Amino acid sequence: MIPLLDDRIRLTRGFFAPARAAELLAALLGDTPWLAVRYENAGRPQELPRWTVNYGERSYDYSGLVFTPLPWTPLLAGLRDLAEAQAETRFNALIVQLYRDGADGVNWHSDDSPGVGADPIIASLSFGATRRFQVRRKGEREPCLELELHAGDLLVMRGDLQHTHQHKVPREPEVTAPRVNLTFRTLSGPAPQPAVAHTSRAVRWPADE
Ligand SMILES: O=C(O)CCC(=O)C(=O)O
Image (cartoon, rainbow, N blue to C red; front, side, top):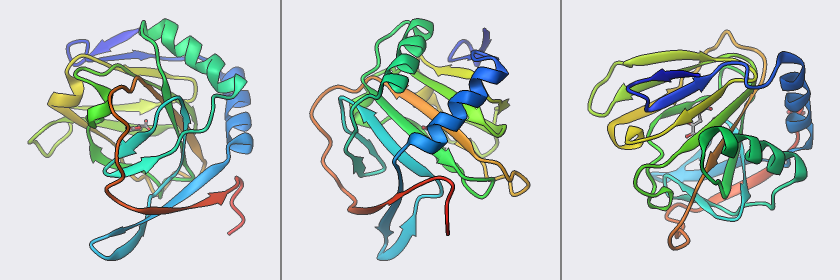
């Protein structure tokens, strides 16, 4: 395990061996009932630049978009148990995201919506294509940390990271293969109220459009 940013990030390379990581990628790609999320931003239709599905016991909200979770599958509950043992906490929510290729990404943000609590522990598992993961201090432009996340890696964000820093998976046009990321969280408090309406379209991988 590699501690980074004063132990606000703990990176475990090869948490899953390459063969197991490849099996998990195939299962997650094929078996996940993916959603392409459409919403309006300042009256203009937008689509999230990745596919996403929520699982677990709690609704999650992301920038005002509220997602209803599906029940744990045996595979995902097994991965949750492994992530819990490594992160030394219990998780009740999971976001599964598919970056179809390097045109997909997630912009600078902190995982600081009220439901995650004061100093959330978030465990992130990566499968498929290697992608860059950047971290910057809030209020600054440039990243203070840049990593490559490989298939099978486990990254745990902890402590006050979500208060002090933002993170991002930048677009990388040269990447042609898909990447699946799982983030396990512990949500509590009242159910979030949707602030942004969305229409989500059920989609299957491989995409046929
Ligand atoms: O895909 C990743 O590695 C990061 C996902 C992320 O930023 C998030 O779920 O908040």
